[in-house]
Length: 269
DNA sequence: ATGGTCCCCTGACCGC
DNA sequence: TGCGGTCAGGGGACCA
Image (cartoon, rainbow, N blue to C red; front, side, top):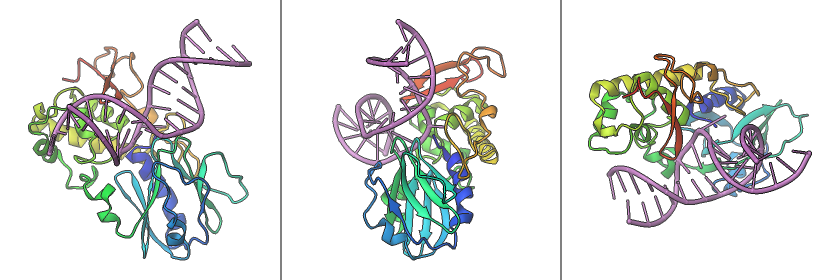
């Protein structure tokens, strides 16, 4: 469900409602997410003002003076700000009442996570991640350097969080199409110039998707319950069998790295 | 180190 | 309408 644009859209939605706010209560209805929600999470958050809502890769960081809650949306997770009179829905596993809203974490598949860290930058899940794709330290030369000798597909390569974070299955297909690179090409056999194009494509597709509030395929909504509008901008994802926007040839579908991949076999080499 | 596979779990959808 | 099979936007754990 959520890739980086959807997580960033969520972050921007909840931040104004959380920053500077002191949670009076944290209710855990079902602690069994990907990892159990730590028992001390409520006491770490209650009574201490939230100073910032940050993001690293697809993790949201609810920071206070003690540390940070690490929140991951997994495949089906969402955060929403609901009016207090609105009843709790199935799969609302965490609730934090605020002044005029309740922050609710909903996650049917429970691949998401709520963890606590006193030093989030050094947390094992975050410490070894690659650069943020929208920050200046990510560029084509970075991809080129790390890809030398790599035999895995370029698609798996750019989806590897040690290389660059936040590139999920939708946007990987989109960026590779934009850059004209075949997703199955070994990462080590893509040249510097093409990696520069690819890095630019990744930045562009992610930035555009954030601009439009993310991609709603079936159930993504922002924290106010609104869908994202990037779906209509998708050029390949979900369009297998339909004509390529460039050459008209039917787009192909193939499983690469356990995940469905759509591409144009004529435009992508 | 690298690359490939396996899961965690629920719900939507499809074909019969 | 019901049922079984398949697939899904993530990504850590494990194995060779």
